[in-house]
Length: 552
Ligand SMILES: *Cc1c(COP(=O)(O)O)cnc(C)c1O
View 1 (tube, rainbow, N blue to C red):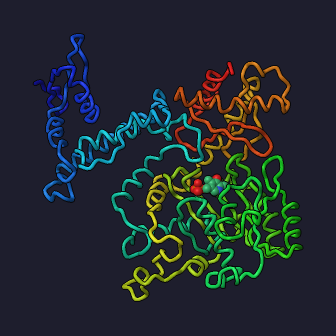
View 2: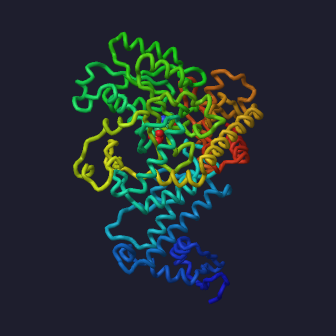
View 3: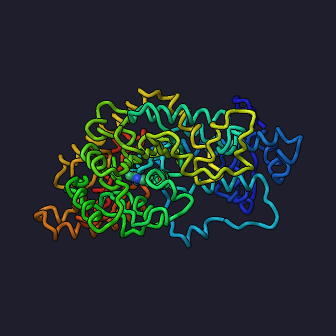
């Protein structure tokens, strides 16, 4: 036994090769090291404390709190080990030398994992192994070379908030059981409404932008037909119609299906080449539906479309809504973050204060942890009057405190997850100025990428000038570089997208998404929404696509 001078003694153990797997598993979980000798022996060293831990962790979870009242030391050891595993993951995720993913097909992954639910509970040691194995095969969405989704990156402060949220483990329906978090919601949502440009109104956090859009739909219908809540369809006495652009998020159309309009009555208004709704077409289609005796009631404008990042012209749409007395909803789930930037807010989000409702997802551009989505209303009182069911076992009116703070009756859920603390803590860390800097930085990196693509126009083809952090482009393999850019070449470029994406995933070095749209076959859509990304990462991305795809 030798003292290695960093507080814990190291014990060198020589084991037979047959026990090697077990030993290695243990070492993996405890973070110690091992070497194998040419004779087939495994020499491994473990901290003296780790030996004790090892014994401890041969126990079942009933050995720790809450079942074992004496179990605090073991509980602490166990949780510290879990945190070690999480920290190792965060460290690896931020190391550009590690892979973004280790891809396996579902059947192979099933073989690599032990997902069985046993009849008899497993040991704490096994649970730690389960935690590290789970993260081993998880796609590293916070890796600087992950550009695949609108939510990229891992904001460590927001994550700390999520850890606290998990520990507090409360439900957001009443002030009674979530007093601090309810007050935080008030403060943060009021600040967000202020950024939209309202000094009144009401808001709520919803499980995702799709549900936020649904809340807007419900409130709009309630505003126009207050009797709908009680009498249903009979209160409307006609065909309700909603309008949105052909570039909108599919959740808008889903409102028509979920709420009984039918998707035929979600009218898809054409967009221009930049992906923005054409206001004159919107007006034409409203008049067309009115002439058919239908009842237009709701228009959705998208601020930051999901695929190309376009901003619908809100002022013109607001004029039309005013003229025909229609509810204006702005789906800023994606682009809402730019409300924080003086530089980019106008003209993109100009006129948003004229909306009746706004969806804004902090879990996208602002980098709050999943999930964090908000829906805001200009008129106070609508949410509660639309959704209130007055469940007597939760929302008693004779409580100790002002029951206006019980938010649970404003929503169509019962239980509601605490999505506020991680955003509040992140906002405290950054300040509003810090968020503005982050938005400006993401836009700056996007401009850098566009510049590099233009400089390498032999290898990349920029499809349109981005308004947001979505960069839409094709990669040009060697064989098409001298072809004129016709629909024939676009067809070839579309066909190579899934193959190149497949190569990215097999090599594990990069993830960028692709999709077709109404105008063109498959193309790549790169997203820069992670604070981890630098100019060098953009250069890596372009070089790596070329390395993987030049021979296609
Ligand atoms: C992502 C997105 C949504 C849906 O948000 P979820 O949180 O994924 O449900 C809605 N609208 C737009 C424009 C989006 O980009």
